[in-house]
Image (cartoon, rainbow, N blue to C red; front, side, top):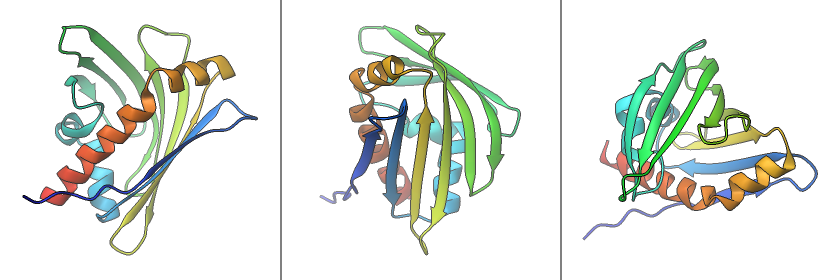
Length: 161
């Protein structure tokens, strides 16, 4: 049996600012990692915790585009998310908003930067939230374990080609 090794994902909540930083390296070239973040058929295969299924209502990953998707738990509970793509620069950067539908006032602005490490990729994401309370609620929601599980699934997807 072959197992994929998963690099460490660093998730940091800045004590002085309402931000969360996520840094993760992938054993794949930038174009593959970027495509996995912008192609809805690929996004559906890795984004979120393993126990959830995903339905994408729209995913127009281009500057000025928008998205909405729903994760569904085993008990049938839906968790909807939506946002707008403010800037999509292929293989370099994605700037988007992110909103959980049950907390519509909690909009965050996320900037994802894709760095070429010579056949490998460093992904750095900075999420700016509207308050420390929103940031702390996001951290308390289990987002770190969801991010880790999602990136492990992305590792497997990238390794499969």
